[in-house]
Every structure is written in structure tokens, then in C-alpha cells.
Image (cartoon, rainbow, N blue to C red; front, side, top):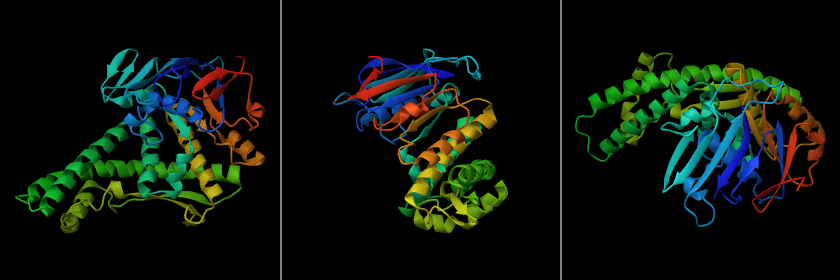
Length: 374
């Protein structure tokens, strides 16, 4: 599927309007702060019902307004491109009276995960640097999203684990505050649930890391001419089955009770980027980290295609700006097949060199999206 149009209302600084986007490539050209990234954010919102900038919903509404919405219509790709399996079309995500609602083809959906089957998006943005140079939590978030994009069972298990973890931490805090009562039976039950969900997550994370490592190593060599890159998964639990995970939780319970929080589990897992077996991210330059983050997104899109047979929509926010000409060429060549891609450019960038016969160019100024023909 492709996005044939985007409609926004009170979304960031964007003018309330419908923008036609029925093309393989859409270029958004403008100075910084004019609304290019906001446009991509609105598209992303229709895929995940959240912001890739980690913004609160209440911060997205325009000026002093409290409500906003973003909606898209979809269409089959142009002739010669793969046709996605999804038969769903229109998506509306609105934030009204401090409550978010999701509609697909006019029907309200209680679970926003259903959006992923309509317009799966992969975004390339500056915030992706956090996957490499930020906290372990941000790196886990990336791999969790990559897995959830094509495996909704993984997403359900992740949600289940988080619910159990929240309950377990609440019990541990109550004990620390002196409300202990009879905690052992309750913790036994929660440990069993945490182990069940946790082992499922660990198995899929291990497989995903191995697959990402193979793809990622090839990509880094192709674009940066550096060999020996790898992605390693370092689980918090050294357990291979549910019983072993339960035993670990029991062994560590005294420490958890003293701390008032769960000190181990999938929420403490780490991913490590290595070069010839040594830590790479900690020693890499800013440019290398930036490239590493971009290639993680390429690997995510490729993995989605390999698993589902479909193409995600690509949202690329100023990704070519800091690359020299040769790296730009290699990066663009490394992109997976796609039905549609949205790019942002500064006016001085040579964006005309990248356009094809199926490209729409829009100029963005103070939130207005204007065609180059206007």
C-alpha cells in the first residue's frame, strides 16, 4: 500500500489541509523549523498512534489548542510495484478531550497495534542516534519495535511482561515500605508469569539479533567499507527455559526486596555493537554512530520485507545531509525495495539529483505545504 493523501488538523505548526502524496517518492524541501519533520511525524502518527520524537500527545496540538488529528488515505502502488496484502484503507488518529482514538476505515479500534497492518512505517531520524549512543533502554526499544512490526505475538508478550513487571515492582515497593503481609505466594505467582513471558521474549530477541547481525554486517561493509561489524544480544537472565528463569528470580528475590524493584529480567537486557569482537559504539566517531543508526533502520526495513513479503513506507528526515557524495550513493543503493518514501531536504541540498519520474516535490514554509508547480 501507499499513502495517497494526508490530512492534518491542529497538528504542530502544519496548516489544516489535505496534501496529495500518491507517488513513489515525495520530497519535502524547506529551511529548518518550517514543518518538514512535523509532516513526517503526522504520517508516523497514523502508523503507530505516537510520535517518533517521544513527545507527549498533549504537546502536539497546535498553539493553544488542545485537540488535533492526522488521517491518511491509502491506495495500491503504481503498476510494477508489489501490492500489499492489507485490504484496509483510511486511518484516522485523533486526540480529543485528552483521549486518543484510532479509526480504521471508519471503525474505532481498541488496540492501536492494528495500525501496523495498514501502513507499517520505518522512520530514519536524528533521534535514532540514541539507539547507539544512548541508554540500553533506547536500544531495546528499537529492537522491540523492529520485532513488533512483523510479529504481533511478540508485541503481546512484551505487553504481558510489562504488566507483570509493573505488578511485581509494586509488591516489592510495598514490602520495602513495611506492607509486607504474605508476599511470598504472590511473588511466586508473579515470578512464574514473568518467566513465561520473559523466556519467550529472550528467544525471539536472540534470533532477531543473529539475523540483524548478518544483515547489518553486510550493510556496514557496503556503505562504510568496514568489515567485522556485529550485533550481540546480552540477556539479563542466563536461562534457557522457564524453570531456570523462575529459579533465578527466586535466587535474586532477597536483593529485589531490599531494592524495592526487579533488578533482573528482559527489561535489563542489552544489545552490543562490536567491531572484530570489541565494543564499537563506545569508541566510534559521531559520524560512524550516525551511520550505524541509519543502517539499523535499513536492516529493520529489510527484515520486515523478508518476514512479511511486504514493503514498509520509509520516512527519511535529513538523512543525507551529513554524508559525502559517495556515502550518499552507497546509502541510497542499500535501501530496501519500497513502495513509497518521504524525504526531507534543505533548499541547498542537491535533491533534484535524486528525483525520478515518479516524484512529487513540495516546498514547506511556516507549516504550509506547497507544490513546486504553485
